[in-house]
Image 1: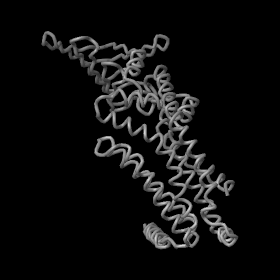
Image 2: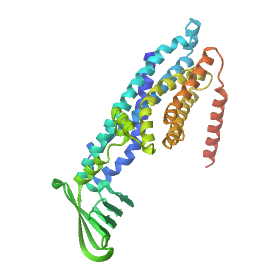
Image 3: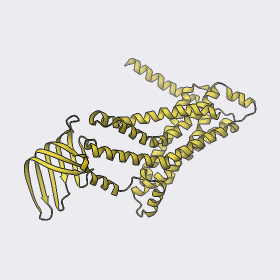
Image 4: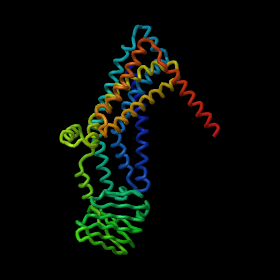
Amino acid sequence: MFKEMIPPFAISLMFFTFIFLMAEMLKVINMVVNYNVGVSSVLLILAYSTPYFLTFVIPMSIMMGILLTFLRLSGDNELIALKTSGVSIYEMLPPVILFCLLGCLLTLFMTVYGMPWGRIAVKKLIYKAVSSNLEIGLKDRTFNDSFKDVMLYVNKINPKTKELQDIFIEDKRTRNLIITVVSPKGKLISAPDKQLFILMLYNGTTYQIDLKNKSANFIDFETYEIRLDINKTVSHSKQQGKHRKEMSLDELQQYLKTRIQRDVSYYNALMEFHQKFSIPVSCFALGLLAVPLGIQSRSSKRSYGLVLGLASFLLYYLLLSVGLVFGETGIYPPVIGMWFPNMFMGGLGLYLLIKTANERQLKIDPVAGLIKRIRFLLTRRYKKV
């Protein structure tokens, strides 16, 4: 039975990882097409992002592996043969528990070590890409505050000529002086060896406000030069500290101990700490639920059992999302929001397992009928269109 779970688990793992990576590809494909970022850099970004996806994909794949195994055993009447040989459902649980334990340990490794390492590696790779091609960090119609004390807004960027159109800049690098620059056209000139970029602006206007003398003036220009230092940008980001998802377990604990104010940042860090353990434990809760769903779906088509499995995981993720929303505001303790989905899904799985072991039929057929009815209505509407 343990060997039976491995192939569907591996297939589910590859399939769901592929789906998550395709969603991430939509973000990075623009870098390859428009900004000539190397394919190797894009592949590295996807590889470094994989640990974050696996924290959710592994529990889902564990559940699907167990569910598909019991669906096959139930559909081929092998479970009936086992029962008539004196093997109860509870005696079938040890391989399931072992399988869930391995998934839990693998997910725990991803949440504690893999995800922080991956996010830090992605950030370093993006810094390297920005240092060689600043245009990647710029987006159309978006305020960019990557540079310290400089706010940059570009209405449109020509990906081929790298020409910037309709530029707005607020420069506060000079003490007691705010410089606002408006220009219809500009261009970035890079000096990678000096970690420096020069933004050349043409036919614009500068507005200067002296806060100390309380005076203001403006100057029209034909050309205007602004120097942007990448090193200052990177060091400024480092000074802001790590994001909670980039912190190790020890760093999170130290942050929670030293944080005096109980604000949103504190609750988010506390939820991140509990999430590192609650998500791995979900392998047991979802795996336990998959056993009765797989056994009781024999009277229905196997596809309905798969739908129920996916719906169960979506329910778990929905409960987890609700816990994140209410936990960050401090409405109830974050520990409840992070662990309640496991308790609910695990309790539901234990209840259904006991009913199944006592040979009590679960009411899956009405659910299967409802799914069949919805599919029939959607198919008929599609044919009419």
